[in-house]
Length: 355
Ligand code: AHG
Ligand code: MN
Ligand code: MN
Picture 1 (cartoon, rainbow, N blue to C red):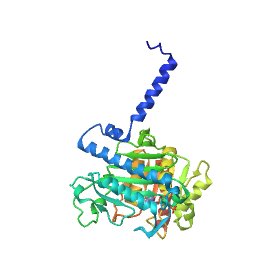
Picture 2: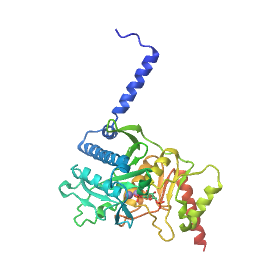
Picture 3: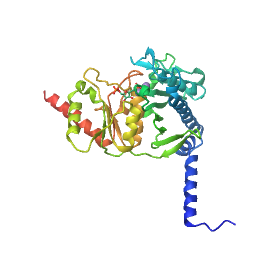
Picture 4: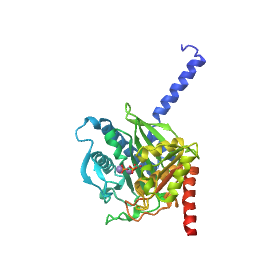
């Protein structure tokens, strides 16, 4: 006979049941719960997210051993379409996504920061299939010093034919994204995603090989103390950005955090509030970050979490790309902090219009 359970026992039982339930809230189950449907489309999205999770696990595994494995770290000696030196891990991560999605039967094309043209999988390509846009390894300058890096992904519907590989159908507003998110390779590996029903974070449990629900329906604070920007570029910003930086230098309540990887800097702001900026410069008004696979997926997420993302003058999700690897200035985070940065841009415009 089960002894009469004390209140304490029942409390422990309840906690254990809750922990078990949480451990059973895997990513694929969560996606289907989100969609409240088992339709073929819902199954597709769930399968796509599962493939993203597999890519994340493969990259995380390589990263944890990178310092011990021959040829995992360092440069390839080549320069990519961005004009940036390519790290061996950039290529490994890029190839992981291709291998994982090539077999999926779901994805028609993969467009990556590391490939000038999209990788086209013709047999998977009935119209209405999906295209993955991704930054396979974000923040690769952190790699050789074992600091956090990430992967960023954006999923769009395949529209029309793209025989000439121009990927013109991808150059549409970020509001056409059907899913977006990132994987953060930090002390733990986290996957943060949205399919348009809020932002949800999962932590990889290596013992299970599963991403387990950590935070559901994350909402970014309307204001936060963090400003995240590479102040080493101060000399090449236009006056509006300099004025904003002077403002935060002179007012209490701000704290600078900059990790050199968009994914890690954004993740901190998603939880604690504040703003990340990668402004354009006088020489490069378009800035450094790429619209289709860095700024737009992050903008999709931050709007789902109640925040904002702008170029300083225009909502990121309204920007229409003219080419696959187009860059945009990025101001992203808490809506009040993004608005404050924009107010300096507006003020600068007013002054220059006065002549
Ligand atoms: P990637 O490694 O994919 O090229 O991205 C690096 C980006 C972004 O992650 C980060 O915010 C920014 O570059 C850092 O640039 P700076 O080193 O110029 O600050
Ligand atoms: Mn990047
Ligand atoms: Mn990258």
